[in-house]
Image 1 (cartoon, rainbow, N blue to C red):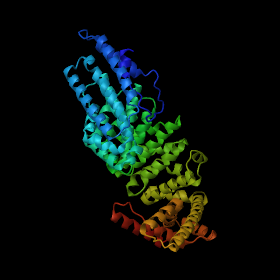
Image 2 (image 1 turned 90 degrees about the horizontal axis):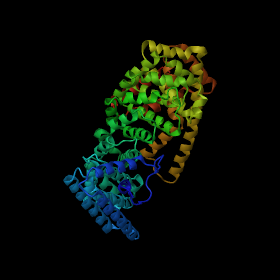
Image 3 (image 1 turned 90 degrees about the vertical axis):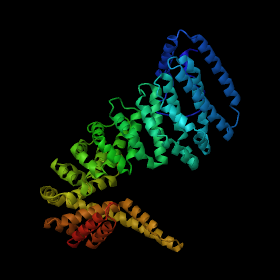
Amino acid sequence: MDVGELLNYQPDRGAKRLRAGDDDDDDPRNKKAGRELARHLEGDDSEDPSGDRKRILEKLMDDDEDADDQEGEPVDESSVKKMILTFEKRSYKNQELRIKFPDTPGRFMETELDLNDIIQEMHVIATMPDLYHLLVELNAVHSLLGLLSHENTDILSFKDAIAVVDLLQELTDIDTLHESEEGAEVLIDSLLEGQVVALLVQNMERLDEQVKEEADGVYNTLAIIENMAEFRPGLCTEAAQQGLMQWLLKRIKAKIPFDANKLYCSEVLAILLQNNDSTRELLGELDGIDVLLQQLSVFKRHNPATAEEQEMMENLFDAMCSCLMLAANRDRFLRGEGLQLMNLMLREKKMSRTSALRVLDHGMIGPEGSDNCHKFVDILGLRTIFPLFMKTPKKMRKAGAADKEHEEHVCSIISSCLRNLKAQQRTRLLSKFTENDCEKVDRLMELHFKYLEAVQLADKRIEGEKHDMVKRGEILDDVMEDEFYLRRLDAGLFVLQLLCYIMVEISNSGISQLQQRVHQILNLRGGSVKVVRHIMREYAENIGDGKSEEFKESEQKRIMDLLENF
């Protein structure tokens, strides 16, 4: 058994979270570890390296025998306490020898192996989350974080840090955390108090992902952050500000081949941006919009090569949509020529087209989308969007996008344009509805009756459920009414509201030809102006961005004024 084997010896600690492409054979990190340590030992002629090796080999054999003896022992609070105290002692001893003999690894290599062994043994604690409080009370969390922030950059320190990351990943496994909420809360509080995210980011900065073991360390680090964010979503802001956002953007734009870590980075980024204006603002300040646009531009003319790469593409699109919820990022998106890129994606007819439509919708909706709406018309976006309005492309259906999702985004983009466009751009938009004997009005009315029927069916089902609830003596409170309303929106009411809004807008445009065509088709198909007005009133009652009462009132007044002249 050579020095490399001694260094990399680890007892079997059972199954751990698998990672795509895991393969323990021919690990270059192991070879590097052996070479590095051998070089240190060979350079220390004053010591007896063969004696060191013999002593460590004997110790490893003893440890194996001890492990066999302990295999049958039950693990309880007492044994966990003993394990944690052993870890503390070994950690202290290792640090003491490192300080005393900084240039002679042979002197502290034995304590390094001892420390690594006890860290591996501590994986058993992950099966008992109700005992997590012991890790905090006995200061083990602080010591583990101390190993992450090791100032030494030798090969042994790297192995310590990776072993700690591996342990934390198992301790924070989301299923385990939910087994004992109380134990999980104590552990997460302690980790956050110790600035765990900052330390993890600092540790990832020094890892070389060309080496498999260190690439695994990065993957497990991202798993720790994902687990904690899922258990406690509120920590996303703090995590992003502790360097994580910057590191993720740097890793995503790194010019290295696609791998599992890049996919995981895109996933964690999308998680950080969900329902969080602070992280969205931070991403914008770090030029993250440009990074996302650069990464997405790859898929303008080429489809993702694998299912994993497709998943990464969707994660990046999700991140972009989240960012565009913040008004300041819409300006950055406009300056970064995001509209031009999305418009090209719609024309290229690749897999990215469905998500590009979604991004355009997010970028143009509401009064904050006014500049983007005007620019969209200037870059001839109407020539792209109206063919998609007239017919749902078959390729989109094959890509997994439902007709409803496609029609919702297209109708939303057109309604945003009708709301925001002024002067010449508005005239160009309205003229589209008069082309080819008002064929777009015909399509608008066709979609109106399609979604009206779907909503009427949903209403019938819901009324039946309400009737049954009343018979059973259950109370229909506001929460239940909100739930029923959300179900109606999901059944097609939202698209129907958009279609009715477009009908009302073009009927108030001053172009009599459009108003006459709308009323003509309504009469021919047994429709009713009263139904349209009822749908729009309900839409007006529920409108609002949840932030400004003033916006809500002005928008309601505008819609009611439009209805007066319909």
